[in-house]
Length: 182
Image (cartoon, rainbow, N blue to C red; front, side):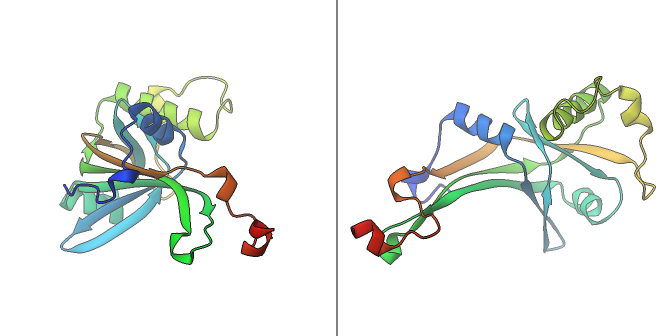
């Protein structure tokens, strides 16, 4: 693992990192097979210090995971642009987390159901009247005819970076260097 080069941006606040991962909407799964990289955006949940996501047991993602379970999962959110009278010091307010490790197929039905329930709660809160049943996961087949698998990436190797919002310097439509100096 490479150390974070810009230590001023290194975030070690576990509460902030967990809150970010629990609320961010999209993560990017990086896989590699036979020296061919593959990165895909996914819905995910952060549960019990692991990233969980689901997908078809067939197709490119499944084939790559089967071939090489080593993965990188990146979550990043931009909070806007920070202005500066010096062009090279214009910056972005953001937070990002990178988790590296080996993907695992979740075979325990209780763990898989819990992860999928958290995912439903995250993406469609309050939509369903009752919790997800184990039988749904055991029987579900996608419209393309494949079984859905649940994967997890334990967060043993996790790095986070951030550049906090600077309220007085955030760019907005119509803001110019001239109006800042007025």
